[in-house]
Length: 321
Image 1 (cartoon, rainbow, N blue to C red):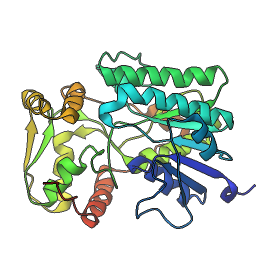
Image 2 (cartoon, helix red, strand yellow; image 1 turned 60 degrees about the vertical axis):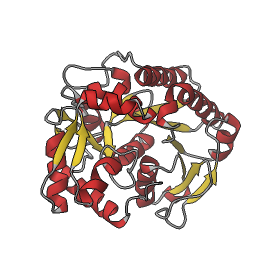
Image 3 (spheres, rainbow, N blue to C red; image 1 turned 90 degrees about the vertical axis):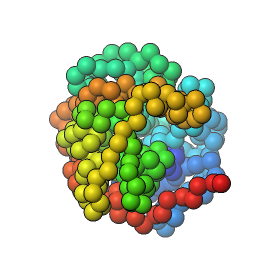
Image 4 (cartoon, helix red, strand yellow; image 1 turned 180 degrees about the vertical axis):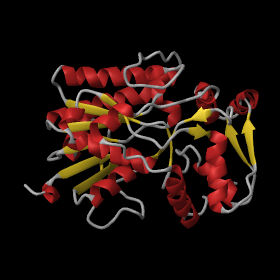
C-alpha cells in the first residue's frame, strides 16, 4: 500500500490540528479533518476532507475515524469548561477509536506535572493540585491505562505554551501580543518576564505528533515535542519586535493585576490558576524525543518570521461593541 492510501484523521481544526494537517499533506497522506460544523477554514487545501463529528459521542467518533491508519486528538472544550467536559470528551474518543482498532495520538500540555523545580521530564510524577492540572493528570493516566489494558494503541505528545500560524486566541502571543504589537501599541505579558520559559512552535508540535503516529515505538508513552533553546519571555518578545521592525515596548501584568482582572473575566480566572508557570523558570526537557526520533525544533527566529507573516496576512478580528 503506498503512502497516499493511508487515511489520517485529525480531530480538531484549530492551530494544532491545522499544523498536523500541513505536515501530513507535505508527506503526501490522505487527510480528514473533523470538527463540530463540518466546515473548514480558508487555509485547508483542496483534497483535504472536512467532516462534521461529535467528539463527545463514541458512535460519532467511530464513524468519522473508520478506516484511519492514525487518529490525532487535537480537539478540546472551551478553556473555562475543561474540568467538566474534557474527561468526558477523551473517554468518548478512546471508545470510538478503539472500536476501529486505530492508533491514537493525543496532544497534551504540561499541566499535569504541577510546579517543578528544574527541567520538566516525562518521568516526573504528576503533582498538579489545581483544577486544570488535576484534570490533565487524570486524563493522561486514563489514556495510558487504556493502552496498558489493550483497549487501544495510544501515545501522547506534549508541548508548552505554543505560538505560530492560526494561534490567535489559543496562542501564547497571538491576540494578546502580536496584534497589539503590529498596531504599534505596548504589549503586556503575564508573570515575571525575565524568567526562562520554554515556548513551543505549533508547526513543530504538529510535526512531532505525526512522527509519533508513524513510529510504533512511541506507543504507550508520553513524549515532549522538541523546542528551540529556552530563553526568557522578554527575549522572546524582543525577537518579535525586532523581526517585525518595531522598537520594543514591553510591560508585564503582575499577579495582583491578573487577580483583579479575573474578577470580571472567567477566562482570566482560568489563566490565573496557571500563573505559577510564569513565576519561576519553566524549562522543558525534550531529550527523550530527540534521542529516539531526532530534534525537529525550528529556531525561534525562523518560527517568529513565519508566525508574523501569517498574522500580517490575517488582520485582527473586529471587537464587538
